[in-house]
Amino acid sequence: MLDTGLTYALVPSLDVTSVAKALLGYSIDCKPPTFTGSLGLYTCECSTGSYQSLTPLQLFIGGQYFDMPVESYIEKTDDGCKLLLHPYDTAYGSDSKWVLGA
Image (cartoon, rainbow, N blue to C red; front, side):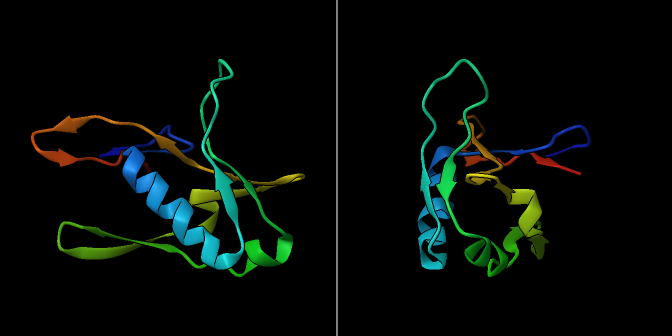
């Protein structure tokens, strides 16, 4: 699903966990959100060098591969990084769905 007003992606929790684990290979350590009354996004310990070494996230949609640019799934902040994938568990039918901004 595409949402033109979305600044982060709504992603099944298991998929967000998988992305966070994969980021460890880039020396980026992401921690799950804690409830603060605001949007729960993973916060990550990352250096400028590790952020700059990231590659696009490859998604398989409708039989085709699409690249999600680095700045669309993780943001460099003054004190680390923020994963722009909000854990969101909902399913239509038996498949988990991602909601992406366009």
